[in-house]
Image (cartoon, rainbow, N blue to C red; front, side, top):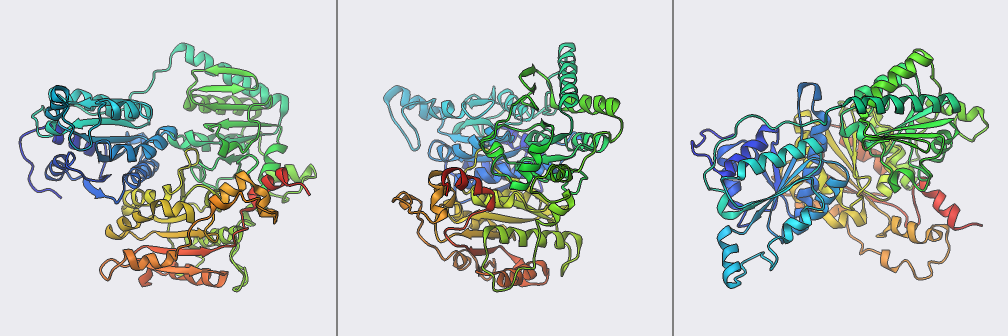
Length: 619
């Protein structure tokens, strides 16, 4: 905490103060000479904490996940907002940061990317005599041009007199568009004088016009007609439910109409999975086969805020004549499209229209019972399906597989949240990386107080390790412990971010899914017959990783003052023992990070990927 604040205002203090006003408590990044003056000013004038990370990529992932976690915990009814912030140095740092900012842009996460640039004086020297100093390129616009592709506003600040306007404009765009913005600030501007901030930075919402209202009514009418025509609807909740904080409106729609619902992976646990009507995660052909059959057995499907991505659709045809999808400020109903319809308004009006036409709970159905009655090979009820997702009864000597591992973890989450297990109950934030970790974890049975965060569209491997830093710091007051699932190839990309976990005295539990040092998902996508015991035709050589003793990284990163625990898990007995220790608040293992190396067979894969083998490798 700062004790005294200087009276003079400068650009560095202006930006740091604006970030603090917007609720930013931690700034992530990698320092450099151009950035140093700003960090000193920030420390002297605000309470924003600097979190230095080993890599710019890790800093970007941390800021991304920080923004997601803060947004999920914010109360929009009170006007609370949430953004993340990351700061790096020109070119060598900013180009490393580009990947996370690109992901935040695609996945609609509000971030402020601060790029500390060479001074105005240095640029004048280059312009006059061609003198290049550190990190400069021959194109002064190189950094700006690149970041314009992945941000909703990009500013270069070289004049302190204009800095307040430029900073406020960018921050307003960040809040309004819920996407990243870019501030490139020259070294000699940080300490240059400028006025103190006035007013507040607020999100500017696009106003609804009479034409918008008319279009919304038409879209609602078309959706009601779709339900009249096909009957037996099922809802599909997507990412924009979380991004726009529409959980309450969606839950009200479900409760009033009784329509069962699935979610995408990205919207998993955004609406409580204990909500009556929840029927699993639909992920196209990569869904649990039981969920996929049940979802398709319904008369029509209504997507609300669901992005059309390869991960969400898994090769399925989304927009047939029995689909309606409201997303990206428009509504598609069969072949008809209704532009400029805002999702919150559409959900509210659809709720009213369906309640008026069908009565309260007039469309109630058990999704699995309906499919089962049609003769499909699915459980007889939704409760039967959901209860089958969790099991801790595996024999102690049974080797761990992808599916048995996540079933065991699912049971652990239930026990920890309901209090039926040993020790005190603990809420968790589940963080999943891309690839088999994402496919396996999508069917975890999430308890009421747990939450789930994953990058399911951009899918940058290694996201989860850096993201853990941001989530842990954002939710430290709430004591929501990170539970992380990451493949061995993904982990090798960003493992050095463990240093930040230890340094900041965080205590995540990180499960490294080690299938004998192999990029399993890449092999599945290129040649799935490999997993059926067929010859690889030499096409698997580029998917082979160097094997690591991951558990021994605890000796590398940990110390007596900052402990870390490493474990190797081969069977369910060892997994049960580790989970019992994690559940015991008095166990010394819980004073720092835990890294568990889960030993899996190279040819193992999540059962949800079976469709790939059936399509490509007929008997």
